[in-house]
Image (cartoon, rainbow, N blue to C red; front, side):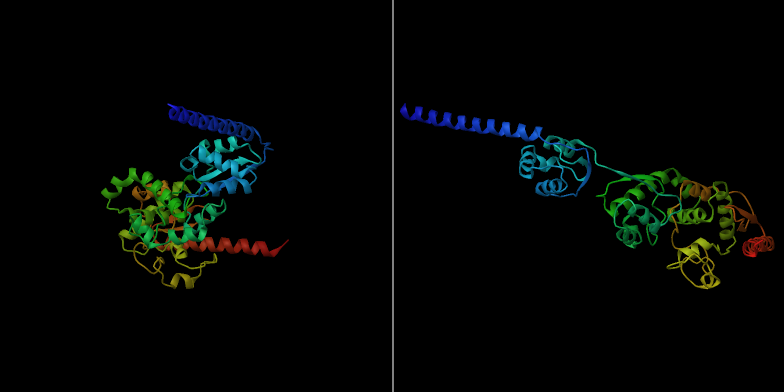
Length: 346
């Protein structure tokens, strides 16, 4: 009986001790949770995937979000932070109270950055616009985007993934990898292309061949109404076994192109020089939008074989080389006249 009473007494002391400890902890917790004097200065914090709680705490402490790192780590541990803290970019304020910082870590939406990819841009240009918002490493993006391995992994037979990065508006996080971003763009392409899939197959197009031709149409004109006409010219030339003779394809194959297309460029062989090769180049030269894809599938019904720029964003279309040569001569005289007027003075 005495032994039993002794055990009960010991148990009671332990319970009392633990209660006191919990009470003190509660008081301490309440003190720290309620303290904090945020001055409203925003602080963006990036938490990478796999960062341990200690790393999260240290980052918040160094960014002056929380002032008591030891207590905040205990708070994270007690609230199962290891399974609740998410990776991403989050917007805090300096000198926050711990509860406010905790709420952002657990419940706030990560910061996402919107980026719009214009129609007709290539992998290098897309890498630049992403880098301007600190989204991915441009060199890694280009390396993966121009690798045959990633094209095969994505299910395409072309040399690179060029052409299948759909031009659209995206939302990305700064922790998203280059491959993740590329994959998201390919996924968007598949979603948009799905409605053209049956029509393309019915007209004898593989997805690679269709997008390659669409990418050329995209680069040849910025006027939407001209795309079916441009597509008809290339269709007619391919049907007659003529070379495409497209400047944009030739430029795509030139390393470090300086903006000046010369006769030597036109005479130099590359797989993309359609002045030298017959048929289509081995893959797309840009990432076309829906209108160019639709134009290739539904070209205008014409007999045009040539077109030349009017120097205003549109083109003159002709059926014969004689007509074409005449319009080229007119354009060259017009350009020469402008240069002469510019240099003559009053």
